[in-house]
Image (tube, rainbow, N blue to C red; front, side, top):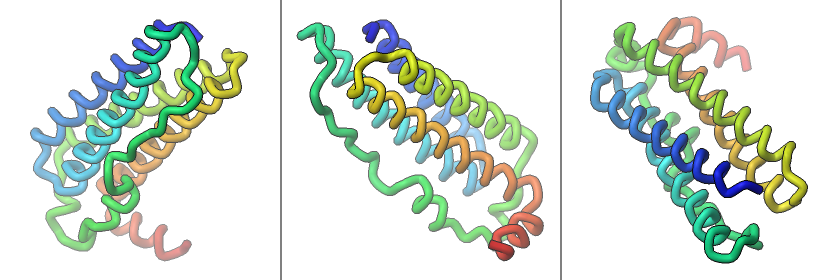
Length: 165
């Protein structure tokens, strides 16, 4: 594993956190705000987790045996479930909210692809597991963002599709 990959990962997580916080401040929509604040918290947790591994590798030159990911608190799915989606305010948004979430989905897709590539290119099972786990987390973020986009773009259709499942 190249230590540079971990540094790139830390920088990507920091860039996403900063973007999510700035966009959360801009938006007036409670769904968008909640989603972006929670994503920012998770990106910060990822930064810290990756940084611990990076520091360990810089100090020892070896991949750490085990460093736990400390959850950022409530899961993203649980945080989004606390929103009253039937409240009229939650469906009011502007084009910047849609553009922001589309860009966020792109960030998450690129991060998932980056981590998946690092997992595939690794010869270490611990390293593969680490990057595969990060890729899965980014894919989960992307799914939540896309779910929120579906709601914002068509609230009635969103509820009809959820009722079918």
